[in-house]
Image (cartoon, rainbow, N blue to C red; front, side, top):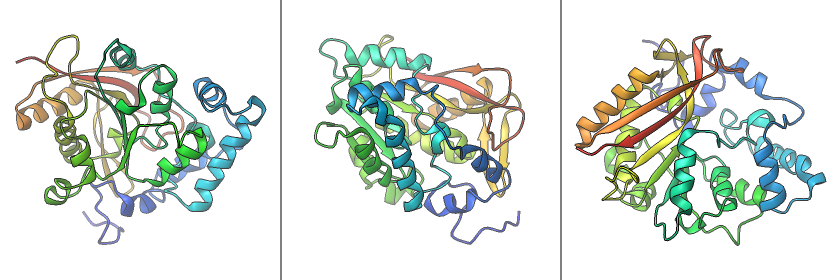
Length: 308
């Protein structure tokens, strides 16, 4: 199928080259316009609490502090599509069923479990875990843009105290490049729990397979017990009519319970493992704003490794 994309932009591969073109794609322009707002919607109470109690930002400076960071992103032209602007970037995805299990494991006495935030943006979820009592030396984060990590240190004022390991990386590098990448060398065999929100819906089915296979390599050996399995969880946009969805020339795949389990069944066949996916639809209407269609839905998911 012919596209209007430059030759260096793959419509099935999310990456730095594609981001600047995706923001101008059909459907994405309206989404971006709706994301630009002039005030912070303070349903993000956990983010406010984090800034006040973890970062020690005075209560009357929280709003201006967030706006200043947002403005610095815009001035720096850091991935306009990935910047969630004032509507969403203060969000912390804390109400997912997997988070309760993750927090219980991470804060258990003598816990050695580790946690990875995938597509972590400023890694605000890691900061919340530290606030809840998790040892930051057992936390990891990754994003396509290391610039976001710097903004996170500025936002949360914890450059000298946060011991988490943050790594810039691209899940979709060719295998020979990926195998020696900082992501592979840092995470392979090191992770117990992985969190990925607003992530899978960015990719095609084939790209999701590659990503999930590489996530499987991250997990530590021996995570086969029923109470402490390898765990992937998060939130993404799915669909009550699952399948390939396009944003302009870009191909993505939105899931329901059946297709997400099918994805992980194929991952299992390719990696010699077995996985149980669980998907919970949140709400009965399409999210607003929404770059897809009216059949889109916000979905919470958990994926756990099963014993063979």
